[in-house]
Length: 242
Image (cartoon, rainbow, N blue to C red; front, side, top):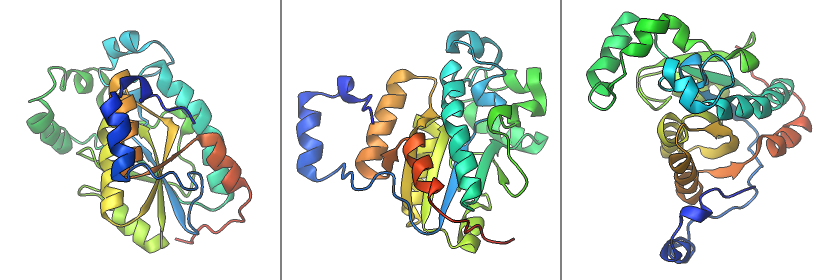
């Protein structure tokens, strides 16, 4: 797969990380016997309501990643279908739209973002709707969260334990924010982590590239949606009941 971070690395970077032993890339598309797919925040808040350039989309949706998010969803849709056929549990995350959760968000994000309240005032709870091209289906799980990581104060870990999960496959938005936080926490909980790089997006090009680089070096194996779809297509259904 492409390495979008390459133009941003210094010669020192290119020497230091391999010498330190980071970035092992063994079997990037392989997953364990009991994987789970976590789709982070592919909601209207982060993708907008139509494919359009990011600078246009953020006029109405300040967190939007623009057209790149819709391209990522085009790649993600076949992977979701293959995961369902193979019985792989799918978890979606979205920001909790309740008034109490919004107050928590305002208390923290307002320190770093001048438009944090604008989007809720304009769009309300619709911001937390999963984008229609990859909408959840019966049997999928939607986890509401108030902070970047899908693990923080949510039941995600309980679901993964119930399913006997050995591999967390992650994708979504944004690369440098909620996806990275979720990947680091999955790694910290002892899961093998696979990141679907071309189904992961960010509103910033540099933060996307370096976010991928950082996760590839330390926390996750990187793969593509097409490669992982091919792997799952050969599996019989093992989806756990309940």
